[in-house]
Structure formats: structure tokens, C-alpha cells
Image: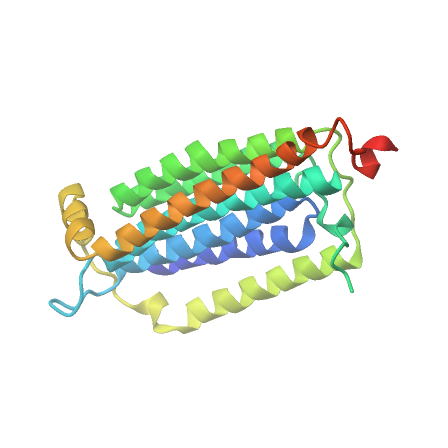
Length: 107
Length: 162
């Protein structure tokens, strides 16, 4: 197994752990943490392919993966800030951060 | 993700982010690794800890629940991991010859690329970060204002009166 496959397997493991956390935990903060883990797994894939992939000379910018990761980190930071602010607002409204007790919109 | 107390989960998450930053540095992406360290370990971990503090989630902790829903979640995650690992193994990636040297990406080149080729995405991301920051502040402040303002005359929310 070469390093690229190793990185991809680590990334798949991170994604699975994040998915399990987002699906099973009932605290909204941990659901957000699981989503962050999944975003990080995608970033790791970008970095791995940027590092080990074959770059065609002259075809594209060789730094596309790296730039994309930097933008992705910025988007994740914004997402985390807004998500945690939403969790705080919901907590002030419903006095709970448990996603299974937020049944206001349930049909 | 299986720890019971929220604070321990946040700590484990921080350790995972730091390890990922080390992996980025190991893969030759210095700028991304340092940005990961600054943003995730520095900012998002602190944000999560403050959110736990403000929602009083650190007290007690939730009891471990083995409901069918959580079991289904674990099964789905394991299935996703199995499919991803199978895809990695059966694709040509596992047996391809990796590039011997890391592509050139010094700080100077990243800066030049950000300022020349990727100027428009950079501006868009700056605008989006500003909007997200303002939105977060408004979201976090709104309830306090509505709580403070009608207090002398109007009754408070039912939960507070009960």
C-alpha cells in the first residue's frame, strides 16, 4: 500500500467517525463536531491528491488542491461560527441543546 | 465520539485536529498545516468549548443510549467506511506509482497565486467571512435584547415564569 492509499484510508476513517458522531450523538454541539470531522476528511483527500497525484505540466495550476483546502478551511470556520451561534440561540429559546428534544417543526 | 462528557469530546476533537495538522505538515503542505493549526486548534476548539460552557452541556453529561437509531447510525457509518475502503483498494490509486517529490508550493508562490489567479475567490471568501461573523454576532445577541427590553411591562417567557 502506497502513501496515497494510506492517506485515503485515514480520510475514510475520519469521515466514518464523523458520520457516526453526527448520526448517533444527541448533543447539537457534537453533531457539529462530527460535521467538522467530515470536512477535515475531505481536506485530507485534497492534500493527499495534491501531494501524490500526477500533475500535468502546463495543463492546470499545480497548486489547485492546496488553494482549495485553504478556502475550505475558511468556509469551515465560518460554518462553525454560525452553527455554534445558532446552537446558542436555540438553547436560549428551547433551554436544551439536545437535538432529539427539538420537535417544534415536527409534522 | 463515544466519550460521555462533552468536554472530553471537545478535547479529543482538538487532538484529532492537531494530528491532522501534523499530517498536513508531513505531506509537505506547510501553509495548509499551519492554517489548520490556527483555525481549528486555535479558534474552533475554543468556540466549541465556549458553546459547551454557555449551554451548560458539561454538567452531568448524557447517559449512553443504545437506541436502535444510534445503532443504525453506527451501522451506516461502518458501511460507508467499508465502501470507501473497498473503492480505494479496487481503484488504481492503491497500486499507482506516487509522485516522488512534493510539488512546489512555497509561501511566496501561494501568496502570488492567491493574489493573481485566485483574487476573485479570495474576495468572495473575505465577504463571506465578514457576513458570517456579522450573522453570528446578531444570532448570539438577539435573544438577549428581546429578553431585556420587554421585561418591565410584558411577562417573560413561560419557561422562566413556571
